[in-house]
Length: 304
Ligand SMILES: [Zn+2]
Ligand SMILES: [Zn+2]
Image (cartoon, rainbow, N blue to C red):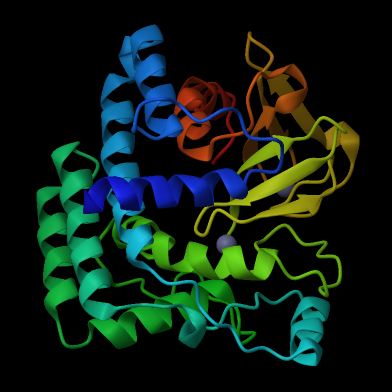
């Protein structure tokens, strides 16, 4: 009973965070994203393994997130404005409502899922699980978050250069249920100035996906906390190139998905175009449904 109560509570959260009117709730207890992923698996069996891994990750994250309280983030408006003006993220490590035993468990479960689907090498899996048990784990996570968010102004994405391969990916996924709560709180604030940068205003991470609204505006979606923010519909979020002639754009056959690739920095970003769609964006589904587009972009010489 506990589990189903948690699941329905979490579904409310997900729906209330969607930018457009949410569709009717499914009659089954399964979350909509999982149903969509199962439909996708039937339509595209070659994505089955990626879909099964995604369902396992979403299921685990949903259970964790239902236990994480909404944080009380005490930030004065002047400090927020100065962070915004400097292009610095605003969630400080101390703001994240981390319960360490729960976070260590989430790290372990994330690593196990990635290992089960061969997305993590056995040696790296072992090293990451050991790190989670280590007494130096808490300062390591703090150092990783602060250096990748740039909240203190000193951004260094390679702060853990001697860490096992895949640690970044595991930390991003394991921290998400906790960090997403901060984004949820801050996205409600209406006293913040506009944010014009390509990185996340809340946690400083890069966008991993984007959505084109019915009004043809683009919103970027953070690859770590899943927050959304409006961004110029042409410019490259990775290098701020805004020369239209140096941006390549191509669409998937069904017209729901697009890729926008930059010929200056060679990075690309995928988008869900709601103008041709029947439902709102679902990051957990759309990032998987567009794996063939990643292959196409990489084949053209771009990097994700
Ligand atoms: Zn973020
Ligand atoms: Zn670029």
